[in-house]
Image (tube, rainbow, N blue to C red; front, top):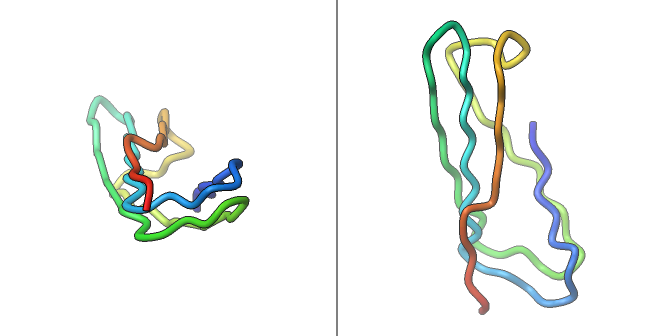
Length: 68
């Protein structure tokens, strides 16, 4: 699981979150969208990969969002 938190006091919409797992010479990617993330709100996302994230390097980042 990954937690995405809006530390501001204004809401965000269409929050794009990407995850990349580099393991065993392969790179897997996954993306999810949070429709609405209120100010000071936290959402938990789950990304599924074929490889075990403990055996590789996992990077998760918010790539974009919009103001409502």
